Structures are given as C-alpha cells and as structure tokens.
Image (cartoon, rainbow, N blue to C red):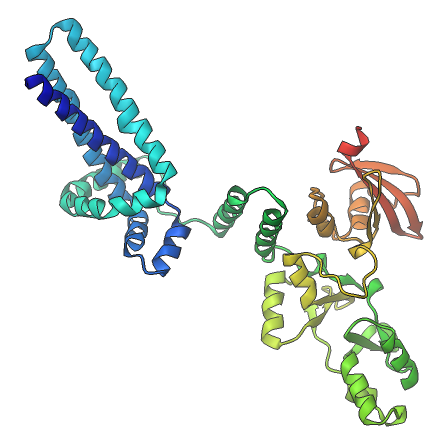
Length: 424
C-alpha cells in the first residue's frame, strides 16, 4: 500500500510540474497580435493573457515559484521514501528513473504540447495563473526586488523600450514566417512588405522622370492643344510656358473637352489660363507614406517633384504609390511590359536604362542596391564610375549586365542575366 501511495504521489507531482512548465511556454509564446484579435471580439481570457504578457516579470516569477516548489518536493519525498524502504542500489535506480521522467513529462512533453496548442493552452491556464499571482504576490515582489537590484549592480539596462526599427523588423519577420508557399501567398507577402517600405522609400525612387514627362506648351494654338490631349492617355497634363521646366499649371483632359463641348467646339472661346489648376510641387525627399497622406488630405492625385534647387525632376501620382503596394496596374493603353522590361527566351531581361531598380528587384527578386540610384542606368554609372560603352559587360549584385544601347551620355538599353543563367 505504501508503494502504491508513493507511486500515485509521484505521478501527480510530475503531472503538476508538467502543467506548470507548459503554462510558462504557452503564456510567453502566445501571439500578442492574435490575442488582441480575440480580445477585440470580446474574449475576456485573451485580455487577461495580454495583461500577463505586459507584466511578464510577475507572471514568470509566480510560475517559476510554483514549478520550483513542485520540483523540490519530488526529490525530497523520493529521498525520504528511499531511505526508509529501499536499499542503496534501488535508491539510485529510483533517482535515475525520476530524473528521466521529470525530463520527459515535466519539461519536454508539456512544452511540446504548449507550443502546438499555444493559444488554447494559454486561455485555459490564465485564470489559474492570475489566482496564483495574487496568492504569491508578497513573495514574488521580494524576489523581483532582489533580481532588479542584482541587474542594477551588473549595470544592465532593462527598462529601454523597443525602437521603431525593432518593431518594424519584428513585423517583417512575422510576414516572412507566417507566409506559406504559392503565388497567392507570395503576392500577399509582397504587398505587406511594400506597405512597410512606404515609410522608407522617397518619391524620387518611383517618380516619372522629367525626360519621360508628357507636357504641353500652353502657348500652342487651341486646336493643337486639343489634338495633343486627344492622343494622350493621361488625365492630367502639366502645361509650360517659355521653357519645358517652367510649369504654370495642370490641365485636366476631361475638363478641357467638357468646356470645348459647352462652347460647341469653338476653340476661340476657350482661355487655357482659366482651365489650368495651380501646380503642386513637392521635394524629392518626401517619403511615400507622407505623400500618400498628403494626397488624401488635399484630395489630389498628381504632384510635381523638385530637387533642393527647385528644379523640376519629374512627377508622381496616387497610382504610382498604390502600385508600390499592389504591383503594376496595367490599363488598356499599355501594350508592353511596364517600365521597359522585356523577358527573353534565354532567361535574360532586356531593360531600358530608365527602369527603376525597385521594380526590377520586386519583379525578379533581385538584390540590386537601391540607396544610391533610382534607375538601372544610374546604378551602373554609380558602380563603374564612368559612362559605359556599347558592348561592355559587368557582373554586379550577382547579375551579368551588358550595355546594348547608349545615347550620348545616357545608357539606353541593357541586357541583364542572373548568374544562375550564365552558369548553365
């Protein structure tokens, strides 16, 4: 009978130790974002788990006290039992068996279950842990003071909050970890990462450069302006006077033809200065997230980009920023791949020199540095420190880049071949 009571007592003690060990893993490992989602839906236990995570020192302190108390009672009880009822050899065997059982059923197994069923486990144990925290509060408070004083003596800072960079990296890591395989999941992951990038990327990296900007001379005859507007696929056109960089206003194509219709097609009754709106100039260093908010507040879709000297650099639209999140938005007028990117049968890519580096990295999962240049031509010249000649080939960022066309001092066309293709 004594042996049976001892065995039942040991089994119960190991089960309690395992439950406490699993509770520690569940509470510390539960996803705060998912708990927050449950709490928003009215789950009171999820709110309590969040509170435990926010006051982790008390939670862990209480759990460890309980765990150490049980783990202390097991060897003490087994030692007393062995001294009274067992010989030296069997006592050693008993202690060895207990050590193995504690490792498996008080540590490894409960932690594995807690990791597999983290949220349900955490929600189940939270009322018990809160009750234990209240009961052991005086003891835990004393132990916390001793621990903090020891840390202070070691001159270790533990009260510093996480920086924005740390939080941002945590989000990126979570996106990478929880994204499954497949095209749809890859698109979701790309969109989420692009949203985080909005705070880091400036408008100069995605704007339409001034040499590709479609503008109209405001001094042209009205018939000529109407002809250019009818052949243009853009809804907003910058109007200039005296020189192309002197933008005096923005003309909406729809507004022009509405007025023309009201005037029964009589061009002489239209005054272009009455139809254009004041141009909106923004610095090239504006962050995309800030510009997105500016577009929303001003209820505008179009802005002109200038450098520190006030010189025109290009333009940016609301659609450009949205494409940074969702990818290229093609319309019925686009007949070639976006930004002059053309895939070849041999695995290489023919790219216009003005193709943005960000678009290439996003579309082909390359790692071309984006800090020093916005376009592939700019990147090339930054790396080689000169204007390459036609036919020259460089290996940069694990890519083979061949110059196909050069127009005066501009790189017009390049062929890019990933190293995996060149080695085949």
